[in-house]
Amino acid sequence: MELLKIEMTILKSKIGLLLLIGLCFSGILYAQKTAPPATRPNIIIIISDDHAYQAIGAYGSKLMATPNIDRIAREGATLNKAYVTNSICGPSRAVILTGKYSHKNGFLDNEHSKFDGAQNSFIKELRAQGYLTSWIGKWHLETDPQGFDYWKILPGQGAYYNPDFVNMDGSTKRLNGYVTNVIEDEAEKWLDNRDQSKPFCLVIGHKATHRTWLPDTADLGKFDQVKFPLPANFFDQYQSRVAASQQDMTIAKTMVMGYDLKMFGEAEEEKESTFKRMNEAQRKRMDAYYKPIYNDLISKKLKGKALTKWKYQRYMRDYLSSALALDRNIGRTLDYLDAHNLKDNTLIIYMSDQGFYLGEHGWFDKRWMYEPSFRTPLVMRYPKVIPAATTSNDFVLNLDIAPTVLEAAGIKKPQDMQGESILPLLKSVKKAGRTAVYYHYYENGEHAVSPHFGISTKRYKLIRFYKRVNQWELFDLQKDRNEMHNLYGKKAYAEITEELKKELTALLVKYEDTDAQAILRTEN
Ligand code: CA
Image (cartoon, rainbow, N blue to C red; front, side, top):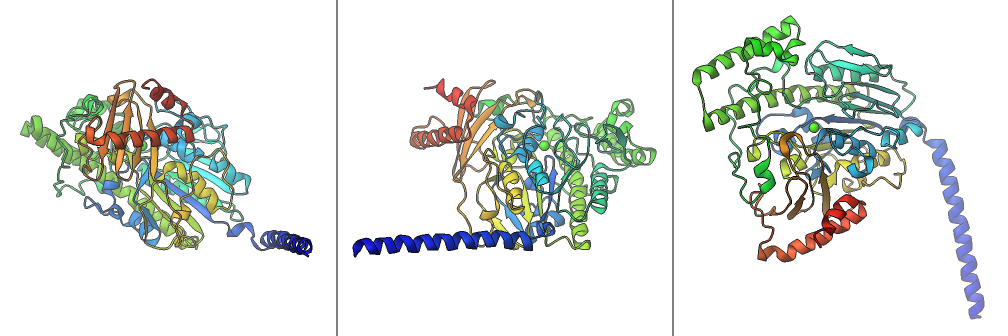
């Protein structure tokens, strides 16, 4: 009797299994029949360069209004804890493309690395599944793009005025106008002429707001009436932080009066390639704006802290003015989607390649695992999937962009991609996010920032500097938001330090960062 029961149960489960297989199979057939390629979402990723979250309305900025970036946030999601794995231009783009840390994709720094375009990328995965793929604007990965149906890129950093573009046939052509406007024009041209039977993935790579923060002539003087408050740690003395005390990226000493702030006499200006490429009308407007400021500065004879404070105001005015055109052109992309009925079926992501210092610690530039450069703005809109006005405080990384896009497109993430899709964190029923993130910066040259790696949890950050400076730093982010007090080695923090080191080691194993593992081994 008992045996019969068991046999019956097995039989039932076999029938169940067969039924299930049958259902799945018909489901697949059904899906194939009813889901034509056109219903797959389009994807637009707008990647700016060096755009600080401190200058974006959606992140609470009072410095300027960014109505268009804010619109993406309002109609979609704001990621409040978005970070990069290596805070510098080329490396961040390589991470975005591959979904892999720098030590895996090979693009470690801007000084020696060339991107190996033969490796896999989310672009190649999309293209293999029938997507049209395109990258327009700043690329900065040293080798030509691979896996794209179309590309048109700035050579290297590119120019703000009348920029050259490298085309797929290898030719270089100068296009007239201000770079942010021209890149948007080219992106829309590509959208107009694309094969509309296929879903598309378009990456718009902006040069703004990269150094030297040259605004569109239309935006000159927009912030001249504003006096920007100095960040609380503007005159940081870098006590207890050796690497920070040895850098070369302060507004006071490193920021150049001519090159950066356009304060030069006639003869100096002639040497500036940025100014030399302008046409007569552009040059006239530039001179009409900057010359009186230069003359006023000369008459003031400022020195010391007074001069540094003056530089800060100029820096902010140029930086934020160059961000005006960025936000405006993001608005043009949104308008294009509206006008062409593409809004509902397009996942649009806006992000910077990393954050940037707007005077915090007395700095400009990026690189550090400290918040202003480690964090990046990231907003995304996908009406079908992400509820409007979603905010997320889960840790996400630029490493996650590739898996996110693939999930949206219904493509399985390749096993060796190290990121995780962000979408499950943004749906009405949320998945739990990471408890910690891993960071590794390699470059050891410009601005004299020591290479370092580390771990950040919501409460603490543990950083290991090496090569230039050998030191640990520990910060309690809850008590010390501005990361001024290195707590490493203090008795009260011994236990948490050990815990963080264990977590860090686990992440090094998970991400297979053998170089960092070797550095830690030398300590034990
Ligand atoms: Ca950058």
